[in-house]
Length: 206
View 1 (cartoon, rainbow, N blue to C red):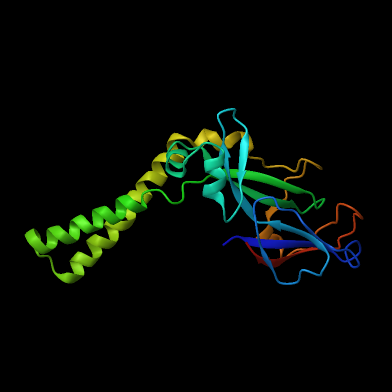
View 2 (cartoon, rainbow, N blue to C red):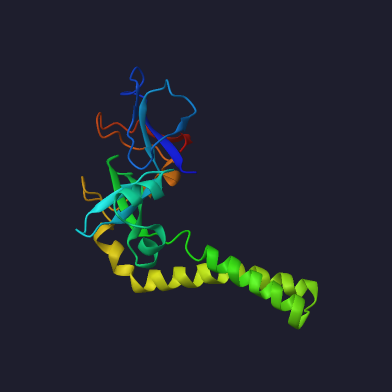
């Protein structure tokens, strides 16, 4: 489940309706749908299309959106064509920015289960390890393929995320960019009234 945040200015949003920007999620459960402010996600997965452009894959229908874009999850993940867009907030001016990292989640799971089953079968019919040793080997087998695939993709296709990364604010040029989860601890300037009156708070789940 993805975390949703509310960008709320105590000056601008007191009497305003909630503005839900469905960028990164297809549906959500909000804790206070009647309160003002803008609802944004902490981030979302996107697919690098053949044209080089990004196709957002909103939660929780990422696979359906990827199918519609002509891709498949395992193929896109293994070839470094899935990236995670992280929403950031500029602590200097309050503007929202994004950066990116490779997303490889969900690959290697089937392989891990198959390898674990093979180890269990070998232990029953051939090796007969102690039960504690068997549990350790099964546990390692279940996670090893995912870890190895993750490391390979992040090394082989690390350049794919670079064009979508940033270390400065697109609006003011500052370098004080915070993940929304970290910005909850700070008073942020409102980009509309410019006062330090904007807060970031958890608003629900997608």
